Length: 197
Image 1: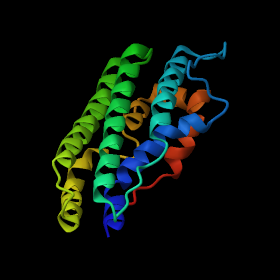
Image 2: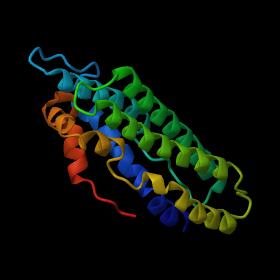
Image 3: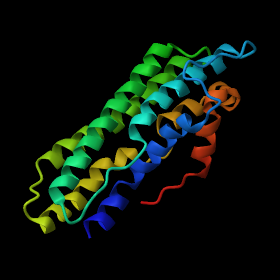
Image 4: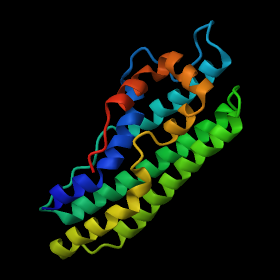
């Protein structure tokens, strides 16, 4: 029962993770980005951001195992997952800061919006982790119900594209994204992913 209820509640996180970790599966991408001499400054910038996604996505390659017969272990696994997810979101936000202002029209505003999306997701993850830490696992039925009630706190993660969607809303960055070698796999993953929860 717990497994069937927890997986849909965490489906939106799985989508976000898939988008992040997809970068790492492209053997042709380079975390440093911008290795092609002909690459424009905008392409180099977005390629560097995708490189940050590679690093973060590697930490979130698998969802935690949720064993309905062992609520305590399920709770521990989810708390660890939430902590790693929060750290990865911080890494992504820092990566945007380190990349600097993208050399495109409205570059700073675009980055600010993307970082706001990341901050909103991080707030939801941190809140979920705190609430989860306070759940009593002694009563399996109560634990199951608590997990169901926890799901609404993850609504900020329902956007399958997240910060990536914010960046691609900028026409110049969208064009650069399509040209950046390190972002091709992200583009493929995002196009094929649909919400399941």
